[in-house]
Length: 348
Ligand code: KG4
Ligand code: ZN
Image (cartoon, rainbow, N blue to C red; front, side, top):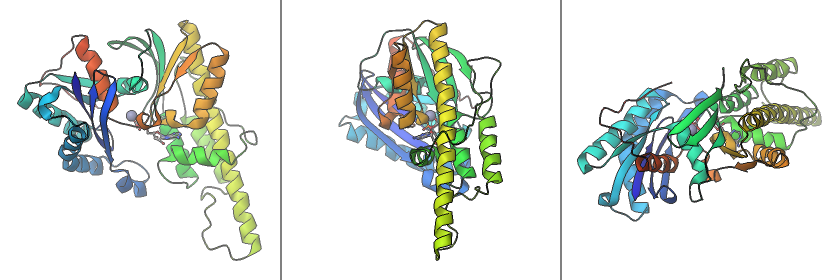
């Protein structure tokens, strides 16, 4: 059965055709990221105007690349929560029109559940139950997954999301946007032991808090005159200037490494706690931050020690995409779920 997935919850316009919930026939992602870069974050008005312009072309492209016809699509699955209001409205309206005009079922999908499902694309689905950690730009959540239509939230961030903290720290250090990949790269050049940052405790041990560690980085960078990062403002003419730039670069790299260490350490600790509390030996990780190589290494090492299997999505499916929405929609369809044309968006 072919399902068309549509994802427009943030800056991406994405469409994908997935067969039987597993085989990805196409996955098209068009991003307006370059238009947001100079603002250091996503501007909702820019995002949804671009999505309005591109949605039809992106869907057409996904169908063409999958080498199928529109009449072969048996259901349409769309992200309806959480996300930016205007952006969600573009995808949901398009999906509704398609479902109505083709007379096929419509399925509204929670974007975070899509991220859980990303690990199963083009792979086997493990047995239930399992724990899932979702670390993205907007959310950080731990779930107990009993089935695809029986997912319990165990903990979430009380303030900044994990990816958001990476983005803000990169901004403090003047490294650019999005921050995750740049912090990861800088961290490989730094020494994580030179500075110690810690993530704040939370009342519910399975909740997260990242705003404290972000502020600690800000104060440290201010104290050491590093808020402008290491980028030389003028061409380094003399040797003294060059030496100073190299020193600043090393200091920024050390901050990046120490920050990444603190964040990944907390994610490992809390995910392990969830697995132990529910006596489960499987952890599924998803979301943009799951693309981080250090995070993957640490989870694999620490969880293997405990006899817990960790599963990550292929890198292409860590960031927002529509294949995960098509796949999850198929699973909902198989379990008898259907959305109607009154399907609402939920914005939080
Ligand atoms: O899941 P995603 O594509 O969008 C949301 O649903 O929010 O995640 C985007 C987030 C951004 O905050 C970005 O900085 C972060 O994922 N990210 C990373 C890495 N690649 C992307 N964070 C850490 N390390 C990375 N390699
Ligand atoms: Zn996402």
